[in-house]
Length: 271
Image (cartoon, rainbow, N blue to C red; front, side, top):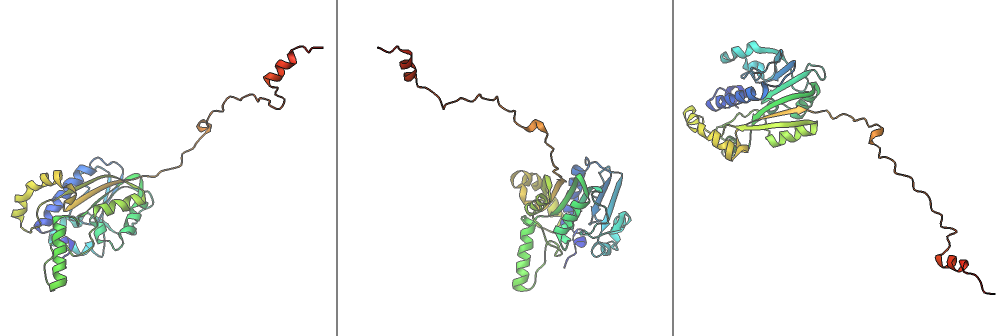
């Protein structure tokens, strides 16, 4: 089984991390507020370009802290502020302006509970930024083929990490809308073939521009930016009422006399 931290040290993992770092810089630089939280994946600093005065990195003690013992993770270890579970964040309700989940939902035991917790701690108009691996990509196809090979022949090497469950971006957007989030943007990237060679990945870098134009939804990685919306009640006063129409005078029809009868009554009678 390949851990997510170990896979990010491989050439395809480094390629994906570099793309996600660029997406964070472009999407989160202009997200303003006071308190921001990155939950998981200390291999990348998603809040580097953000200008909020209070920024924290939280990791899960069960999964991420053992990875910090790796020699290459020493800079990340210095940034860790607290250990917390995604389904039980130690923050008050409506206290954070930005929450970043880099591959956090893929490793969560209950991604629905983690999203509900993020919705709880975010303020009104607060943002959530989520990155993940797209199962509908060349990398995802190779992973499924390797899994099938393992089930049939009992051996085979997986291309992507075996830990966690990959969540499609369309599925994630549905979850966000059900919780009351409004999806602002969805970006895809890493259209290179599924190879472990750094040289081949560098040669296929030109596919990034081509894939963005012709098959955008099949990138190996995706990044979703959503904002929390709270639709409150709208008070209505007397102005919303339709103006009363002019009263129509009633017409009496009970003692109506026909025109013929009135004419006969006006003529003198012969004697």
